[in-house]
Length: 310
Figure 1 (cartoon, rainbow, N blue to C red):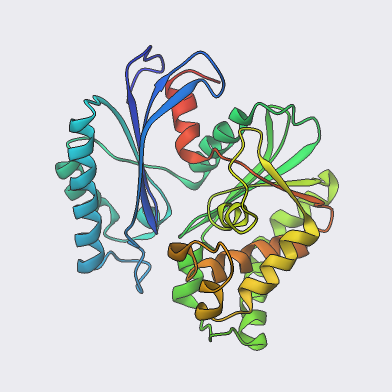
Figure 2: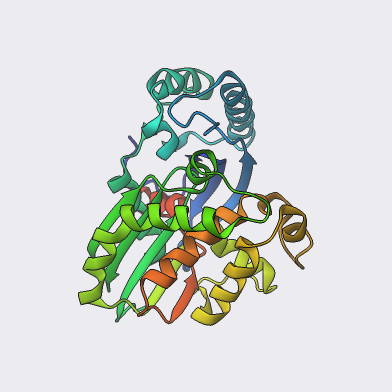
């Protein structure tokens, strides 16, 4: 592991997610958010295939090719300090350890497989870079391909956090979904999500979070659809606005989603699953009045930790 204080040296974070691999190269600076992005790259690799518990040959080929490309970019940008983090897909897959070993050989660096709890902690560190006071109780929701992380916090303190294997690709591979989704299919998904999330959601009734802070997935799509640029302090949307978009996207066909104005082409397909998750959360937690989109998440939380920005 790296030392927490790296001065002006460059730092690269690699996020090996279930759907996407991210490369982010930064260096420390004096002004908020206290690091400067030198380069970022996102590749859609979809390593969480039809068999969510095993990495198939094609998935491994795509991932290896992506990591090889990242290695070339790291050399090009002369980055020595690297923090590669693998998340839900690698936690769930039976051949995760052996596959990680292959990727480590290509990357020439150790890859850390984060637990769901560790992932939630770094997501929280990323959200704190928004430099908001966060006086009231807030709930963070990070929607990934394999898992969904919830973090309840007030000011600088985590009150509750939990990771669930109910991510976008998990839903895609475990539930039948017609185009458009049938009401009976949607009910089956909501019943499953309720069974998984209810215990955690029940604990929220006492704390009454008024704001949902989202990172990744459907939250980025919200910014695209409304033509707003990411803000350091986060873009905010009303509960009603988000639910309207959720209903439109989750009940449309892929062709219809692609025709929605400003819909990112590479997000149209899996946007259905991501907005089903978002809709279920908002309808289950009625006290949430606002949805705030954080420009920072796991990658930035890792940066905050290793550049000693906490």
